[in-house]
Length: 275
Image 1 (cartoon, rainbow, N blue to C red):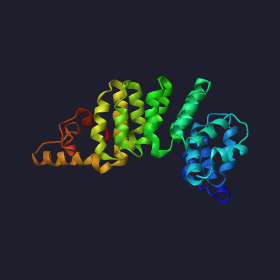
Image 2 (image 1 turned 30 degrees about the vertical axis):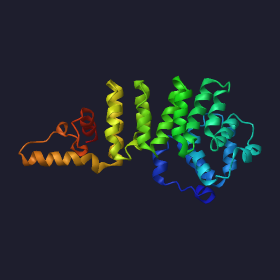
Image 3 (image 1 turned 45 degrees about the vertical axis):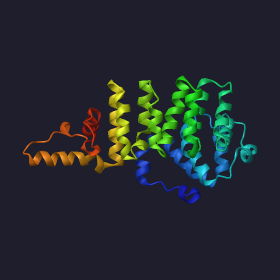
Image 4 (image 1 turned 90 degrees about the vertical axis):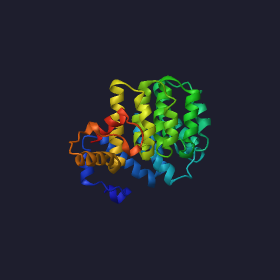
């Protein structure tokens, strides 16, 4: 029935793995509806009583992609006076002038939770060709948890289009916990360009203890998903050399010959975890 009404084809595997997560099923349904009925979905979001973060991350991009003609001015009269009406209008205004909308947000007298939620959504919906501008705005205008909220989401978005610039922004972070979270959020985008791995390692090296372990695990998992052959290539070359020499190979002996630079203890650990 969902497939007939809104074109959503829910595979049995999807339902089997998500029976304990009804919110994910709800998001899938609303994301599909957003393509065919964007005004109605935005009106529903306006009246949504809980946090709209999960919905906004999935639903809003579909509307922006499929219905660029929808603007704050064109939809304002159709949105009911719900808890999230102003956030929706603000995110639509941000598509035209994100810095102006961000500046307007900072002037609002909203409670901390609402403001941080809106900052996260603003970073997520920031126009893709201007995300670096948003990151610089955050560095210049935000602090504390508000900065962390915007920066981590902004880094994730920017890493998908410009990993090199994302690394440059991450290099400006001196607070270990924030750096660890931001790295984890943006890692899948960063490793989409294998050449950036050599630039990620110094950032991971700034961390210690559990934060370093978390970053290493994130890098190992993301790198394996993005470039499995690249992860295993140095292991195979070292193994072949040592077998020819009549010696056994231990993963700890695998080195970063793929990058043709000096040995790096962080990379050694990453390769071991990936293995």
